[in-house]
Structures are given as structure tokens and as C-alpha cells.
Length: 254
Length: 294
Ligand SMILES: Nc1ncnc2c1ncn2[C@@H]1O[C@H](COP(=O)(O)OP(=O)(O)O)[C@@H](O)[C@H]1O
Ligand SMILES: [Mg+2]
Image (tube, rainbow over all chains, first blue to last red; front, side):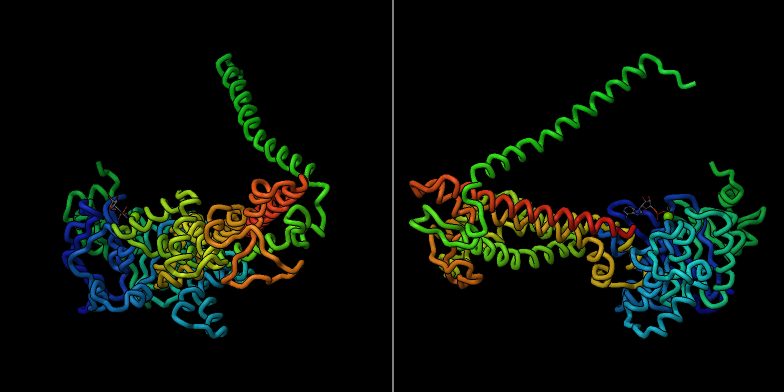
């Protein structure tokens, strides 16, 4: 649950692409070991928000970010080690991306980038992450086949395994289920419930029910503003603070 | 259920006709190539032999073989590509993977595009001024090779960039997300998956380098140089050398009374080498494409 020192603290975050502002000064905290749901329609700035947190926003040259994002109290914009920051935050993108490497190397890639090269250590890590991502049983006999040749749902779990391979303290999932079937989605949701014992999870989703099932708290982001942020029981109740939230959550959004 | 209305039938017929017209146009490209080859080979036949490849020209170039020119061309190609390929590839990696969209990098881009369009005679004059005189390399293999390198580099940059750009950005983003640096991403993902395109682009420059006359004429190629038959390294870097393209030009325009089949045989060797290298490039591309990983 939410404790005194938040895992992530966002204060007055503004983000613009060129002249177009897409996040209009938002502030919120994410507690340790909570599943923090972010809901909202397309284009509301959910993906951009995640990219600010792990600073991959740097790869959009026309993006300007102001305000502060603190991860464990450290300002991400002032950190001297942006690669360390990105390793602290596992990121799962909406579309599954298997790297054009073997399944094994897909997972071993991040550890190798920080100099882990002992085979026994890598083997253990690969097995652990693939197991956590509920993929191990399906691929354990063909770890040296290409990650790109897996099915969409398998690649999405491979992506999750890769995001876990650098042992992050925060796992961000950005609409992870849009490209995969409901059964796989349910399996991954079980995985997330397991993972939240150890790490903090930010669950961005446009499936309202998914946030309702999994999250402790949910934030409704709309057009770059926070409409409402509260415990799930409130957000998904019959009486959230905002009428807009009620309409969105109940699918009567106009 | 799927009855063809007259309108549909007309459309289908039109589609069939269009397809044949396009096919005929494409197929007609083969005709000139075959005619050129047939014409050249027919006239060259009396002179074509292994002896012709390995012997030096004799009797004031009216007879004999082409060895000094052949080995000179190989020198020029190898040295110029040894310079142009690494610089070109590294420059392309910078432009495609690192460069921000600012005025300076746009200027570099513009320079590359324009350099690629500069006629070879202009490169020749530049090489003369820069390498022969300013750098004081004199008329030499090194001056000629550097001139050729300047000529091929922008094209290598362009083809390399195209190869790099064919690797989807989503792969790069996936790497950045797990904390990989740009260089780690390039080494693990981008280069291994674009190497076929990069190599093909470089190999295609072999034939261009071998075929050009102007850039070497002013900077290091000579009409004639005495070389022992079959000697693999007859030239030093500072020497002038003979070259196939130049030799062909000389035989056709400067030497009266040459046996007719000799310039044709020279042309066949040049063309054969070009076709061989280009075929190798295509084969390499096909082979690597079959191993494509996504
Ligand atoms: N790289 C970019 N360059 C310019 N505009 C962008 C870029 N990425 C996102 N945007 C814009 O930012 C807004 C928010 O997008 P996004 O964060 O992807 O929303 P969501 O993930 O909620 O669908 C959109 O209007 C989108 O067009
Ligand atoms: Mg999004």
C-alpha cells in the first residue's frame, strides 16, 4: 500500500512536442509495491507519461519536459546515469517486440549490456525471467530459436521477460494486451499479481475492466490532465468524484 | 453470385493488358545488355585467352595482353574502397543513428547528396588539386585511389543509411528501454541486421571504381608502364599505374594500328569483371535475405 516515501513522485509535469503541449502540469505519487492503474482514452498522454519516467522521451528531439519526476527521490532529469534509471524501470510497449535475436539472447541482452557474462548466471536469469513471464514452459526446449518467430502473445510475454531481465524495481505496462488474446492476457494478469509482491507496477490500459481487476489505485488521465486519482473502490464505484470518470468507467463517454 | 458485369469485364481486360505492357518494358531491359555482350565477345574472340590476361602489352601496345592494367585496376579498387568503405559506413552510422536534426547535420546531409551528384570529371579536378598538388602525393596510385574514394564515399554513405534505416525503429526502442546505450544497440541489433545491405552497397562501388576513367586520368593512371607478366604487386603506392578503363580509352583513341580484337577483349574483361562483382553482390544479398530474422 501507499507508504510515506513514494516510489515515484511526479510534480507539475509538463510535456510538449514542439508547440503542442500533451501533458498539462500533472502531479501524483506512486507508492511502493502498488499496482497503479492509468486509464484514459487514446491520445490522452499515457504513453508519453511513461516515456518521461524512463527518459526515453529523450529520443524525441522535439519534446520538451518541465517539472520534476522523482524515482526513489532522485530527479530523473538530473540523473547522471540515465541507463541505470532505465534499468530500474522495466518497460513493456503496446506492440510485442521480439528482438531479432534468439529467445535466450532476448532475455540475456540487458544483463549482457551491464557486463554480466558468466553463463551460469545468465542461464539462471533467463530461466527466472521467462518463468515469471509465464513463457518458460513453452520455449524451454527451443531457447536458441528466434524471438521474432514466436506468436504475438508469446512475443509479448518475451517482452515482459526482457523487461524483467534487468531486475527493475518498477514495471510499466503500456496497453500490453492490445495485441494478444484474452487467455494469454489472463495468464499475464496472474503474473502481475505475483510480481507486485516485489515491485511496483504501473499499468496503463484502455481496458477499464483490467485496471479494475488489478490496480490498487487508478488515475484517469484525459487530454493531458488528471481528471481523478483515487483508490479503485472509489474510481470504479457508482460515485467517483467526477462525473466524467463515472461516464468513462461505465462506457457512456461522449 | 459473382456474375461479371460488362464494367467488371472491361476492367479485368484492362488489367491484363497493363500487366503485359509493364512486363514487356521490363523485359526489354535485357535486350541491350545481351546485344552489347554478344557484340563485344564476338569481336574479342581472337584475342581472348589466359595469356591475354597475364601478358604485358607488346610492340607499342599493338599486341600482347593487359596484365599491368588489370593489376593496376585491382590496386585502385582495393585501396580506394579500403579508404571509402570504413569512413563511409561510420559516417552513415553517425548520420542515421546519432545525428540530431540540427542545421549542421542538415548541412552534412546536403553535402553528401550533392557530392554523390558531382560528375566524375569534377572529382578528377578536385583530386588533382588536393592530392597531387596540395598534399604532394604527385601522380600516383595513392592520389588516384583517394580521388576514387572521394567519388564513391557519398554513394556508400547513402546506401549504408538506407540499409540502417531498414531496421525497424521498434527494435532500437526495445533496446533503449532496457537501458542499452546507442552503441550497444547498434552493435547488437542494427549492424548485424543491416550488414547485407551495407556490403551490397559497397560491392556495387567496385564496378563503378573499376569503370571510371576521368578521376584517375589526371591523378595517377598512365598510358603505359612496363610490368613483369603475372607480377601481383608491381606498383608502389607512390607509383603511377595502368588501369583497364584508361587502357581501353588509350587503345581506342591514341594508338594507331592496334589489332581490332585487343580493345574488344579489354572491354570484355572489364565488363566481365563488373558483371561478376555485381552478381556476387546480388548473390550475397539473396543469401543474407534468406536468413532475415523477422
Ligand atoms: N513522438 C511524438 N511526436 C509528436 N507528438 C507526439 C509524439 N508522441 C505522442 N505525441 C502526441 O502526444 C499526444 C499523447 O500521445 P500518447 O502519449 O501516445 O497518448 P496515449 O498513450 O494516451 O494514447 C498525442 O496527441 C500524440 O499525437
Ligand atoms: Mg499509448
